[in-house]
Image 1 (cartoon, rainbow, N blue to C red):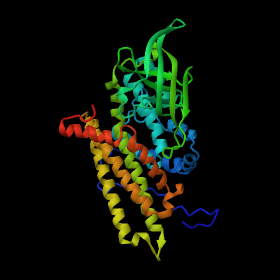
Image 2 (image 1 turned 180 degrees about the vertical axis):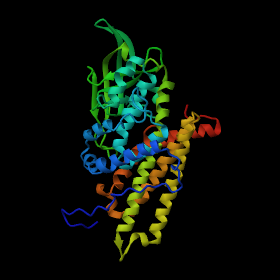
Image 3 (image 1 turned 90 degrees about the vertical axis):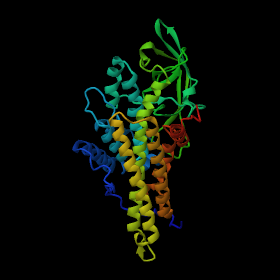
Image 4 (image 1 turned 90 degrees about the horizontal axis):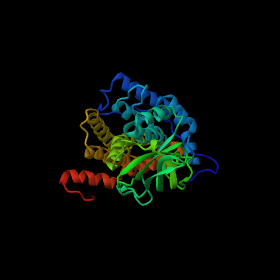
Length: 406
């Protein structure tokens, strides 16, 4: 790509978001659900998009945006908190889609804080723990992390090796935790981490661990090319003591951990749809504004065919994620159904991002044109909350009745 030194290629006008819903998948949203969606869309347009590329490039968490997320009651990711209004799963899905259309890191901050850390406490904690943490976490006064994945246990996190042993220290009953965690969002820049560890009964339990606890050492992972505006940590837990009151009483086995993860899987699928929309929007805008050989790219048959291919895939994953969310609202959603939603939506988003990046040519690798950032961030979504391979094996077990992994 030939370019005058010191001169940046022009960014293409993306100031007007396209309300893309070709099949009317979201036409039945209520006024309240639409209002929630549009609140997020305004936040993304007015506050996220003008600054996020700079944060992404500098590998910096946008703490001002985190504060605004709390002020707009968007940080709890739809988790029910006493005293705050209920948000339907459908409304929260639309919100996750809009947030990811803006940026994957900001959406992941919401997912880690609300869908994982806060969800763990609300779903599995005591009344006292919920009272102590839920409100402050929703208000952004306490930032939380979810410490499950380990350096040697990702897809097989059920085999985690971190341990918690009952003990008494200075007259206080509690637990001593030892082990390592990796890829923990907000694990080095938050306040508490919900650490999953194996108790003396051999079962997996959850513990609320303050990040300033002696023996809690967190190192921010460097060198990432995806989700650069949120930090993930490698955590070493060396004889970390927590009082007995920090044990989540309803987290009695890994099945309870799985309940939290199950609740987030659809959110990842919605986020993938948002990334796909962002890439499609950029491709449409570019095709109309970029002139080559005396005419806009949009006048090319090849370009129109690519746009049609992207819209076809986007429409399919929109319809899928909406249907799965309706099943979740009625309590009918199964694990394999949640898996096929994530599996299909991240694959579809990947395909759309690839086509969009190619359509923009050399301009497609510039952060200011957005596609490259979404292209990179989709790779993280494709892996976290269960890799594509694990989702396929869960679906395969449902098809055949035979487990190929456990």
